Length: 422
Image (cartoon, rainbow, N blue to C red; front, side, top):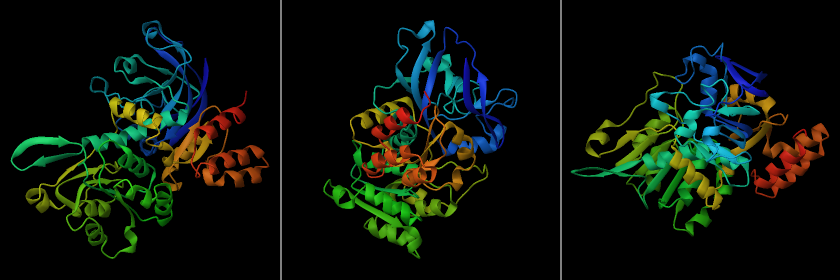
């Protein structure tokens, strides 16, 4: 059958093209992709090409479909999986396969398996690993965002603490502890914040830093300080650019003792140094933001590593249990992944958006693969409608504005009903 998709041919060479999907085998599943959210990791893959660890050397001859944060509908199931999966089921998946030690992953490595496509084929290893998940929720975008949320959740679970003289790690952030989310007013930081404030093991102090005051103001609007004070969580939003000595200010907020857990969301040497300098005794620093520079390094206080038992680690991606936790928390309305989304667009916007991702302000860019639509900021929907003379945009703006400017199931349903060509 024919499919359309954005495929990688070489570094900085993404093409939206039509191609033929082969007939599925007894061990494969054909799916219709509905939504895919664009990850900074996809940008890194696109600009590096075969220089990326997950991209195969012959990608020019066998181009890889981009996108790994996707959800949709199962269309056809190979005989070997018909006992578990049925046509018509909604799905999402865990893309971090790590199959038999391989780095291959959808959105990087497969010719017929990725999220920036109308249809794709899920290979046998995904089902073998239990990474294809039935999704029973209402909105496809929530399933797409379960993957980036799972990366945050994994970071929280991977944190660890110790006791003097006891050689066992106590896994997870410290309950009722002090948490700093550095450079955290971007999309992934907002995902971390919604999880920190609503998960089972919560800190008593959360500080979110950034240099962008507009993003900090928006974060505070979505997460009112007084609301969480009533739940026993002291919440601060700090523009570190306003202080000559940001570390001194962050330590003051902590009560002078530093932070139990620090998540660093920017591959910036200065931010990493600040993250190291604010750690309290037995503090755990997770360097979450992956750099593109293989020689990237930063200053860390190794005096504290030795004498104050601070420790540095990093995580990339989550696991299937983290994704399931994200889906369950979302279904229970305890977390709202929509706080990460600032733009929507059609499949025809995916290539340019991916290649220019660092230059586009805002948070997550959400692609709907069965419609044609320029990448549009949620806050610009009404203006775009007026410019195009298209009343559908204004109707969409009405829905979004009625939900505090956030993307929502009602908006997705309107989009899929009125923007997709029948």
